[in-house]
Amino acid sequence: MGFPHQRPRRTRQSDAWRRMVRETHLTPDAFIYPLFVVPGRAVRHAVESMPGIFQLSVDEVVKDAKAAAAAGVPAVLLFAAPAHKDARATSATDPKGLAAQAIGAIKEACPQLLVWADVCLCGATDHGHCGHVLANGAIDNDSSIQTLAEVALNYARAGADAVAPSDMMDGRVAAIRARLDEAGRATTPIVAYAAKFASSFYGPFREAAESAPAFGDRRSYQMDPANAREALREVLLDVEEGADLVMVKPAGPYLDVIRRVRDAVRVPVVAYQVSGEFSLIKAAAARGWIDERAAVLETLTGIRRAGADLIISYFAPEVVQWLRA
Ligand code: PBG
Image (cartoon, rainbow, N blue to C red; front, top):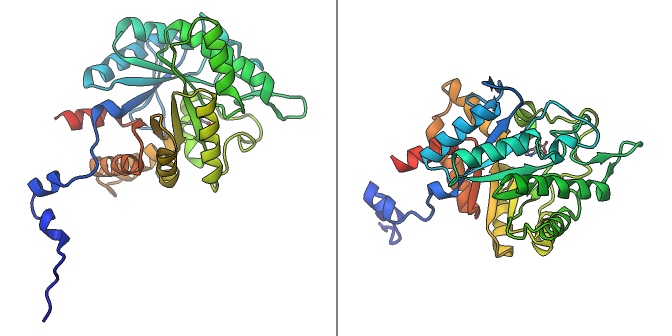
């Protein structure tokens, strides 16, 4: 009777062995926590589809930013849902607008915490699209990137440590870089949502950010979920245009894209575990169908194993606490 010569189980037989041969590690420094700011004072409004996530007024968002920083989260990603919405997204270019206020308040309260500002038009437009809409309903790329550049400059001036364009217009990274540089903001990094797919997993976010399109969908600017080769093209273009970090979004259904991007570029790769990925785990855990902590750590380990250097996750504060415990 033959015995196996190769026995991979030898290095799996105790926790000490498993720790020693572990290939992928999660570290607190890799996490970014999204925050949603809304108008008002003392507002802490639960997002129904995202248990534990809230729409927060500026005073409250400062509290959660402080708590995240105290837990050891190095960065937050800020989304604003201003009250005033119009066709030109003027709230987003206003130096006294909601996002600018929140950025300033967070930086004042926690100077060490990095504030990444999401740059898009959808939260500040009445039509909810990520660019300007023409009379025929089409999205006007080239006027949109001019406005996006103004939004980015506004947030950089408000104190943002990075601007993160999530609109998926062509050429916006170059437009933003040029505008920041000419305005004396050459040191503000750009985190480009480079490969952002038109995903069904953004549903819960649109409740939180009040950014669902009033008509149509985002498929003329966000990517077709079937395309990985095109994702590489998008990423390489953004790097060429000056992106300092590139992002793949969502994360879980696109692990192959994360791997290919990691192998193709020299800048840090960020993956966004989006709202729907969060809500699926929360919903199953609430029913007792899944062990929440184990599932969260497994999904995040998978995202990191695929090649993500950094992960944006609604689980960030909890995970960082688990990792530090
Ligand atoms: C807006 C934006 C979206 C997300 C981040 N920025 C939604 C969308 O494109 O419709 C999704 C984040 C999430 O689902 O957690 N441009």
